[in-house]
Image (cartoon, rainbow, N blue to C red; front, top):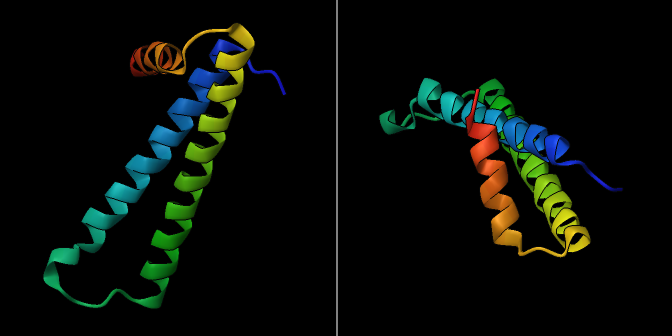
Length: 88
């Protein structure tokens, strides 16, 4: 499937949001206390982690396809997408 640049930016933002959710859960559940997470906490964190992993993988594949189709270096495309995703 061919993606547009804007679609890739949206994919990057989705992956960034999922990563932020994983970090927020980690901080909320406070692993520094050395206590065991409840079953619900563990399941919630694992679900968020999988979602982030899936989104990041899908993004990497889509960017590689886009770069190949455009005939441009992958790192250039990634940099442009990162800049666009970081803008409001």
